[in-house]
Picture 1 (tube, rainbow, N blue to C red):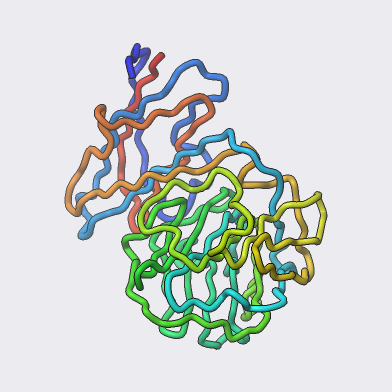
Picture 2: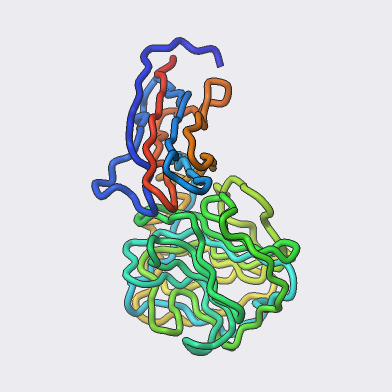
Length: 334
């Protein structure tokens, strides 16, 4: 890109350890309607006191995609019960994924619960407030926690995927290299009527969910760009697909697969058109950066910059384990 540099600016801060700033202020914004492009040319992150490498996630918000609605869970009574557990037994590769927007999280946000009791050795996929907000998975062998933070009041794409016997978490397309583990077992629901939005120990989802998809294939094996449109209907390897479409206030929920399930809503669960991952508000693009232990590294450079166009912003630089000092330099170009 041929650039006319208008101004160069440096900003200073700390990476966010599993949370957003209390005041909700973004790191850097290029306002909607701006005629300038911001080129983030250098990011220096100090990990001089760290004993292990630090994964930094540069979170970029970008608008302009289309969609309609999502499923709202009230946090204390709302959930869906499936009429069967068909298509939810996994002997090999599989993927469970969704877009989620968490209003608050005093305990856990259940995405898919297949246990018949709180201590059953089946499986569940959920978000927990355990040290910080993050993905969690329970099966018959163990409870696993992601090391990548999830932020409140932000649309986030989350996934768990088993590919060639390796089970991995993904947050906004970033694979959690800190927790990818070998697992060769068969995952079988112990509940004939799995639940969406409620765990068997009584914790309810509080917020929004859409595009909940279960696949009997490994959709991902490394970092990827999260989808910017709803998933396609009736794919051969998809066994559950809940778009969350419908009129505002609707309590009708449709499974858009070849052999669909039906859903029984309970409590405060409705379709809402006020929130969607695809309303053009924003999508989240995550860039993984690894800073070695005991050092400072230029993780972006003029040879590999990050461009922010009109309406784009960097929400934060996220680090799961430490609040690391950074210096970010950018140029206004035209």
